[in-house]
Image (cartoon, rainbow, N blue to C red; front, side, top):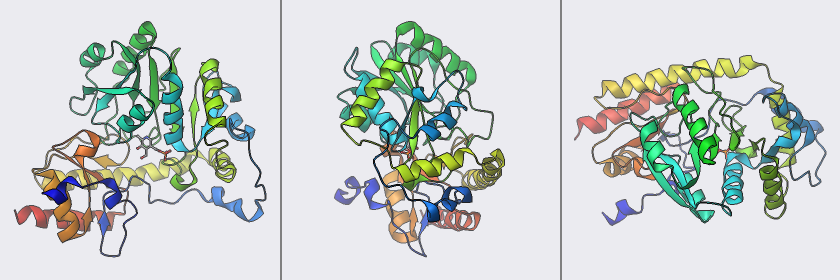
Length: 353
Ligand SMILES: Cc1ncc(COP(=O)(O)O)c(C=O)c1O
């Protein structure tokens, strides 16, 4: 029992081995576009870069976002730093609560607390936001974090709900932090870009272009005062984002759309495989509409995660970390043979119970 209490992500992050099947990792196993590493042999710049981010990358991003200029972007160390800087920047004014949909990406509550604020929750229904509940809980909050498609639910919010949230937050003067790191990995529709006076859009090259380790993300906001405050904070914390990573990200902005579309087909096949496989094992789960996670209900989830790891060499993440205590998260960022093998081991476990 004591052992079960110690279950933490650090037990699994980076754990590898020929026998191990990891449904744990939240990083794509598919390759990045070759254009991003083709620049490596000729790369020579090692100086500090602009705090706000390299101009060529911000110019390229400005072409992707409506009515924007390079000034509206800050290039960050992944979406993680964009979230952290945004939360700390808005924490000095107004309410001290930040609303999160639950289940949530496991770093959100920590980041909110590190920024000196308090996370409060609206429980998702069938993995999606219940607008009426959000409407009740959001009063007095400084911000709400929206994550569609979601890690860990894999669900995509209805556009109607997103529009209602936009209006509500504009009326109540509440920030929306829209974490769109999976916006290109969506199976059901095009991304809906949230907009409004206090919308901060957060994105990353980690997932779309499989560049997690290069740590390049960004935030986009038309609120220039907010952007300036973020730059001031970054000046005295991490300074510029890795400039080689930014050059690689710049190359990624030039890659034809077909690269992402082709990879999306692979993600979708894997989604079908794991979804049907787990349904076939009698498990209850939401069908993912984006990202690369499933979150089935599992009896005795802690025991499942530990036994699967120790006895069957399969890594899964306990739902507790994501605010989903009755569930277990599986990432399907691994090839179809390994997904199949992993599902066989899960069947063996279930049959042995
Ligand atoms: C929802 C969500 N937001 C942010 C991040 C962090 O991304 P990055 O690698 O860009 O920091 C992740 C990574 O798993 C994520 O799932």
